[in-house]
Image 1: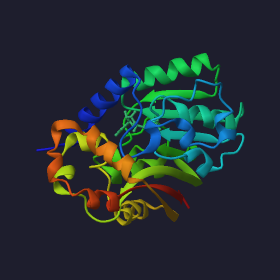
Image 2 (image 1 turned 90 degrees about the horizontal axis):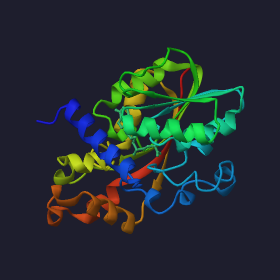
Image 3 (image 1 turned 90 degrees about the vertical axis):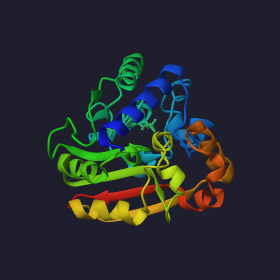
Image 4 (image 1 turned 135 degrees about the vertical axis):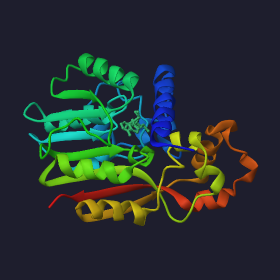
Length: 265
Ligand SMILES: C[S@@+](CC[C@H](N)C(=O)[O-])C[C@H]1O[C@@H](n2cnc3c(N)ncnc32)[C@H](O)[C@@H]1O
């Protein structure tokens, strides 16, 4: 039986391995190509050349969040830290950025990059999204890039996000969701979960969980993947799945990246 602990362990091992090998990409996203396909050139230009290479994301939560100087920002599943570094530039010295991630290797990499970049307004904390090491009502904006789909308890993650946001605070997330069910073979695969596919839920269920914990003004905008990207994500799942059993068309139709915005009243 697959438990929350098993999922956390599998996902953590997957991303520890990735950062050790410096491999990019979480699954059905174009983050494998280059970071420049995710972010606009003027945002990329805020960091030194060569510092933007390691991204495991599937979108651009920074542009989505419209960050302002002086804000406190929390990044859920900060990985190697790229979105936190962009956010740190946006909020400036009067602002603050906190990245939370459960994988020690990711936190270590993010901390050493922040030091190299001389960013004093960024801090990385090791912890779970389902039990955030962050004070209640303390954050102006929550961002996240291709992470919530990986959680075995998304309702708990949204509950925690709601708790730590200040009243009036904003959630701006890029994540993988689905339209319709995924093939059973994929849903059962732990490697597909770690690759940001099997854990993805239907867009309606995703926003339903957000509403349930109290979020309002929820909007969800799809960004569809091309077939090549989905094929490479399925191939990436390796021998854990009998690839012949998967109806590719079902996956092409079902899985997409979405821009999600919501507010705490
Ligand atoms: C696909 S990567 C995305 C990293 C980063 N947001 C980016 O765009 O490069 C997912 C990250 O989320 C972390 N993660 C996944 N599930 C988590 C959870 N339940 N609690 C804390 N971190 C988690 C993983 O350790 C990994 O670093």
